Amino acid sequence: MRVATLGSHSSLQILHGLKMEGLETAVITEKSRESFYRQFGFIDHVLSYQEPDQAVDLLNSAGDVIVPHGSLIEHIGLAKASKLKDKSIFGTRNLFQWESNQKRKMNLLRSAKIKVPKEFESPDDVDRRVIVKLPGAKGGKGYFLAEGKEEVRKGLERLRSIGLIKDEKEVLIQEYIVGVPMYFQFFRSVIRNRVEITGMDIRYESNVDGLRRLGKVDGVNPTFVVVGNIPVVARESLLPEIMNYAESFTTVVDQIVGPRMIGPFCLETVVTDEMEIVSFEFSGRIVAGTNLYVYGSPYSWLYWNEPMSVGRRIGRELKEAQERGKLQEVLT
Ligand SMILES: Nc1ncnc2c1ncn2[C@@H]1O[C@H](COP(=O)(O)OP(=O)(O)O)[C@@H](O)[C@H]1O
Ligand SMILES: [Mg+2]
Image (cartoon, rainbow, N blue to C red; front, side):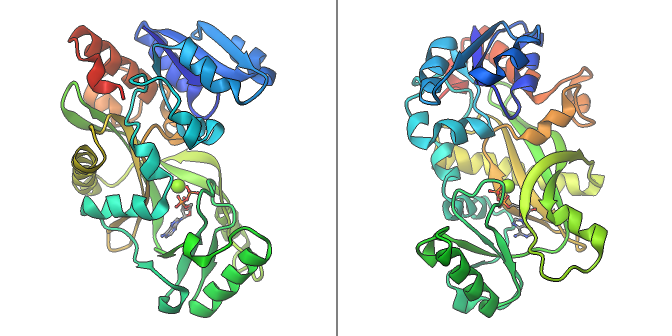
């Protein structure tokens, strides 16, 4: 079985892990990065493109299976992602649609009875500190914090004036949860019929994580551009609850999104001083925070007693699925 992914995000971890499980690997990358990927012995095929448009064709021809990650959809776009060969993605293809719409995304979390921040339909309803999110603004560019309805209105006006939005209906106005961010990473194994916690991280976000170095700063808007990831482990007493969240999330994806939740996903949360875990987003596939654990995490060790990155876990699932004649159950 030859497995391909796009050269970016978590591709090194994915391809390294697949190779550890004995699979044939291919990376699709833009020309300028070709020599970078060629230096790694665990990549069997490096295929490069000049025009972004060629990426889809290369992905289709290079692998029996494609592993999607955060950058894949961003690079090739949602419309083109639907052109990826049918039944070739390791993961839940239908989730791409849900993930591209923040309001729909939050509804899915609500359906899973996961605690989420309060959402405000209109700026007029805002009665507390909120974070305002733009559609499709990965990395948080353009997001802003506001202390009440007046500041929300002013912020939206500014976004309109610089052309970032046309209509205020486009944005998501969400209660800002004070606490610490924790991003919980999971793997839903269809073959072993279980949800595993594979790791946790904290996104290192610029400039919000830099502001605390300066104490109180006036006139600087916090921004949330991810530039790295920091490892973390949670108090063990948080684990049963977060595992309940994860299991209920997979059940809801099985029922509402279909055909089933397959492989890695992440619940992005803030944990408050009341030990409440409030989820403001999810990712329906591998997140870059798993790159911390190429050699396995404190959690994956508990299941495997061997180094198990999420990339390798994907390889293990593919191998076990193939051995049992169930490959189609982990592909969409
Ligand atoms: N409701 C919230 N309360 C507190 N912080 C938040 C909230 N929503 C988002 N954040 C912060 O903003 C960042 C970006 O928000 P997110 O919804 O994950 O957008 P995206 O990942 O699409 O850029 C998060 O990683 C987190 O640091
Ligand atoms: Mg996010």
